[in-house]
Image (cartoon, rainbow, N blue to C red; front, side, top):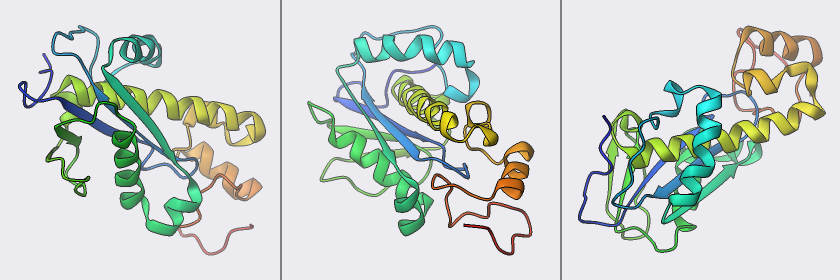
Length: 199
C-alpha cells in the first residue's frame, strides 16, 4: 500500500520522469499535487502498470489533482546539457506550472537541484512508495508514450509505437539499416561498438 505523501501537513508535490534511457524522443517529467483525501487501489509505479491501466488513470489523476504540470525536454537540449540535467530541468519546469506552488517536493530517484527556495527530498524508488510520485510517473509515461506514438507515424520503420524509443534490438537494427532521424539523441551511443552514423 503506497502512502499519499511524505509530509501530510504540507502542500506537497511528487515529481518523476520517463524516457531517460531512450535513444529517441524527449525526456518527459510530470509534477502533481494530490488532495489529502486521495486514494486509488490501482495506482502504483508506472512501470508496474499495464498500458491500459496507465491510460485509465491519466484522466482520473488530472481531474482530481489540485494541480499538475507536464514537460517534454527535447533531443537538442538533452544533447546540449546531458540526460541527467535534462531530466532535472523537465521536473523543475513541471513544478513551475503548479498553481498553487508546493511547500515541499518529493522526487523519485537520488538526484535533483534545488528549485527556488522550496525544500525537497529525493526518494530512491519513490514511485513505489508514495502516491504523488506514482501519479507523476503515470502522467510522465502516458504523455511521453503519446508523443512517441505521434512521431511513429512519421518514421514507422523504427516502431516507436511499440518500443517508445528504448534501445530494443529491433530499434537498433532499424538505426543500423536506416540511419538516424531528427528525433534521435546524437549524444547517446545509438549502436553498440558505434563508429560513425549516417546523419
